[in-house]
Image (cartoon, rainbow, N blue to C red):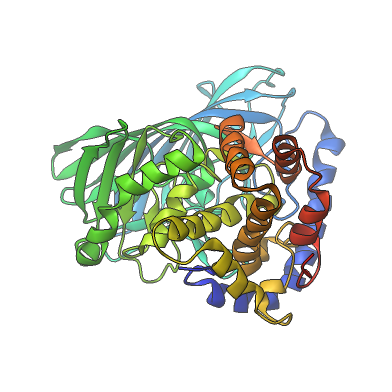
Length: 474
Ligand code: ARG
Ligand code: ZN
């Protein structure tokens, strides 16, 4: 299937209306965020410095590990949580922020000593009893509870802890993590995770990484999960529902855990059966699987409207088609293992995952990538596809727009035509290998592509990523 993803038109309609307002708010908030650290010196900043989401993430520390203990009752929609963050101060800190929205905080300690805190929108502002030294490792424990409230993204999509009729669809791109745990909520900060999730017996709670087992007592079942490789907060999940579970190990030694809502089982079965071969195909093309765990969470969540590449185990709002399966799993290399440093670079995630769909089709008897490119290129200059350049979407309202997915993929196709197949696939593998468990920027990708191909690619990137309107063909 070709981009845009299935719900893109709905999102695109919303984004045009909100773009102007968002841009102004973003500009104001960016100024405020920038003023924060300069004004105080020893207080962590309220944001990671991302102009698209100025309050996302926080300055002054890095979180190495999250240990999340949750208990959810789908009936009352009540969530109880304890989050233990192991972090390191990157500067002296008399005060720092976490991102946390909605839920009530009932206790907060820093290194086991009660700390002062206050809420300010999505910022949970923490003042430890004694200042943290630069380089000091510290532990923040937050206990909280309440009914999580999803956020609405600038594109109109629900994001965060989204209740379903039998549990919750838990996704967080780009902002929603803060609706269910206190986080340094920007992909710039990646961390390992442990999850302990208790739900009523008969429900299943699925998070990221390895499944460590479950225990049932007094009508409740506790599921344990561990995500050892670093993960951005937006890729965390703790989805709950009535699921059929299937587990196996692939020939490459990857542990697969599939959870499927019975209502989606018939439609999902033939697609999920292809997961091992899709992962194997992606491994050959992109290099070793970045994570030891894989699988799928196929929920029945008609109110959501998108799938998410939750780390190790993508989350689908309904039975996915094959190209969506290819797309979300390609993200494990591009977007999850190689993270964005800034949301502006979103094409490095969505453009790559979309191009993986084109390549899959081409190599499995379907339409060639060239044909897909040509069909898109035939769209008139007035089409939404050319509304903004993918390398500079302009605001958070545009990061999931058609140009990011489709013209992002077209950029890769033009790169492939310019350098030839051997260099192109070398570039993809070198990108995944060189930045795995880390970050990559557009400038770094361009530099790598030039190095691997020996070609000057500045013009091509400029035209396809940054040029306004429909690019003319050279
Ligand atoms: N990254 C998801 C994908 O691969 C899309 C997430 C959309 N999220 C949103 N808040 N609009 O398609
Ligand atoms: Zn995607």
